Length: 375
Image (cartoon, rainbow, N blue to C red; front, side, top):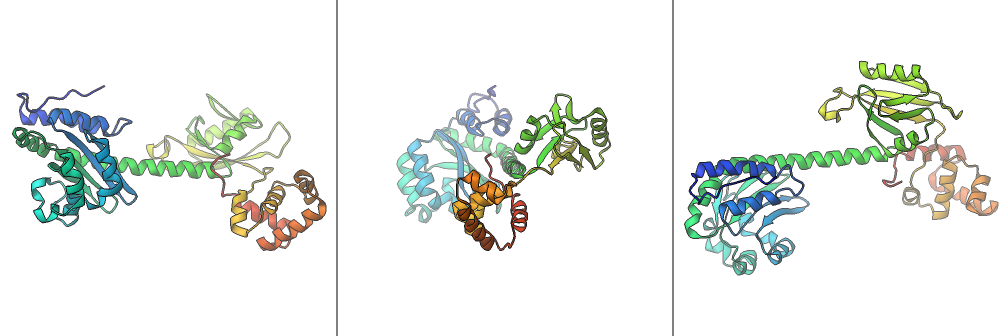
């Protein structure tokens, strides 16, 4: 729903106008398009030609502007942002963080031969700005800026922006924190997906909140460990009750879960989270690690080629052995002769520094923790 604002030049007091714009600033943190809608409304309310915010990090410039010509924005990001005279001013300490500044703070010496100012801003009419450095840290510089419009409005625009500066500053800090949290969540998710063991995050009743790919594959087999709307279920009611009791009590236990298929039992390790059901744990009470002693894990073929210099054929043989095949079985599966397989096996052992097949398999199992992101 669009936030209703009042133009500060339509009779409302400046403080009332600024107060009406405060929710608009924070709404930018909650909407999928970030600050696009925020500065769209600010531009209309302040009656300025263009308005936006820029975040500069070590990886580049991320900015949201409304009202700029696309050709200007593209040229700025590609060629001119490094010679931005306003950026140079705050880098030299001429502008303090949280201080409102305008183009009048730039000296003729700073603009006369500046490519960004002369070749880009002046021809487009974007050389008269007012804005503020909202955040200036080693991690990020955040700046909001407004292209000033009619002269009779400029005093009111400055007054309203001065009242809004603390909120711009707070919104920039929250934006940075959100970016950091999203990055951490993405990293945690990637680590979870690459983990070679089935992992389930569950609440105190055993209801599944999150699984990795390996856990999804294990649950689909319905062989000793299953999950439904009620929660995780083991092979029998007694084991399921012991699991739920451990979750309720926050106890670390390991359960031996038989499998109807007759395969080796799973080992279900219950690892309680630090703060049971806390926001930092995503509401999870514990992580369940389901270990399958029959599973044969292997690293990606690309890792074997890069790490040991194996040829594609040698890497395929190594992976067959890692999955439990004998050399003769591997030869049959790969469609090569026994003599070729023996030659390749000798090369694999020599390149990996192992002298026996058992040592090779142990090495490959240790390397299996490195998994491709996609199945």
